[in-house]
Length: 239
Image (cartoon, rainbow, N blue to C red; front, side, top):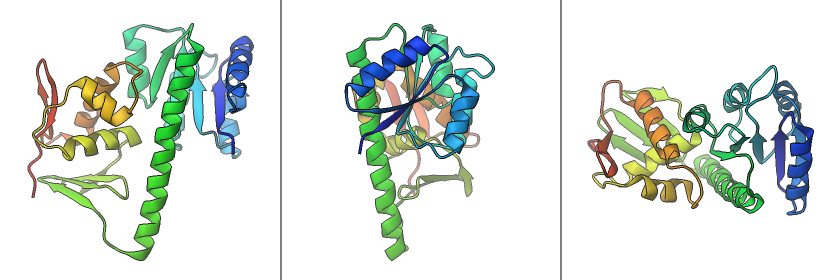
């Protein structure tokens, strides 16, 4: 089955260009010229495997749309925008996007990033389905336990002091990776390679996700320590 990409952009020329590029590579394309139209398509049952999203659109910005989508869906979101400042990228990643590509873009790089995100999303869905089947036959769940923190790997859930904390898929994957290697300092490059799994993108992605994790997890504890000039290390105390 062909993978479907939803393109959200108020510029019809950009939609047409992306449609030509993606359909020539075997993708199915759906499009929307506004955030409200995109939300309507999703709520009517459209199930894209990935969303390409512009930022500067009338009525509802790409940032607002991304935040809305993240409340209900988990598919990869890639911003494709003419706004190229670092702060724009940081904001986009903070509100839940998986990647940020600036216009004008290189078609081959765009395709490489799309394929990389789709591979990771498919692995995530496969692992989730396998976990559901496993839970149907057994009550055993793999849990990493630290002082004040529990990570339930099969169900993608995290508890701090007994209370469930909502994490995005990427935040959970990042936390799990660090927690599986306690005491080991990883550079941003190493984390990006191991968690995101491909060679494209800004290392600010790692910084932003670490920041978000700390804000959600570390009100009364410290689990992730910055090793200045090097990277990050998980320091949770195992129980």
